[in-house]
Image (cartoon, rainbow, N blue to C red):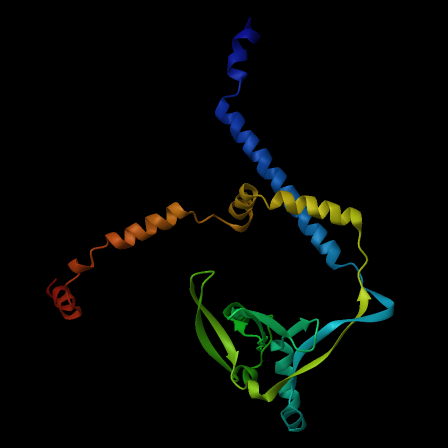
Length: 246
């Protein structure tokens, strides 16, 4: 009889069961996320193997220091800067062309524009990104609107790009990385699972940090709009005088 009386108290509620299921799902997602990161690290650590017969695959374009600048006393200094802001562009032909919008039914091609790398504010303040005090003097801070993030972004741009010139050379393939098909299959399955909309939301909320929902953003905007700035009519002198009276 005693066991029968205790039986109803041992039954779990619906809310408790849902909470347990949710915890199990999050635990499974975390496990797969860690495994996916391990697979990425394994793929990065696969050694490159040299080819017996290297072959050409298009062309590559990059910046080099002007010969006159390189022969000067600051040649090595600007060459060191170039190693940190150089960019590489690949093409099937030496012309490096791209399609332009058609004009009067004709297909037009223009040359691709290539610029030096700009340094982001995060990299600029990162201690691992080594820039000496003298090198920093050749960079200018700029702010540009980012349409993706919808805000102003801070960059640091090299102020003397005329010291560098573009060069084109054959893009030779000399090494290859062997492919592990079992590893690639497992990685593809994990990427497909972790790429789901709901799973990505759980990852951003539980692993990267709290999510910023549209509801929170709307509440913040309503709060800002509801502030009555017209009521703040006291000037700085009036505020100081009122404090002195007290």
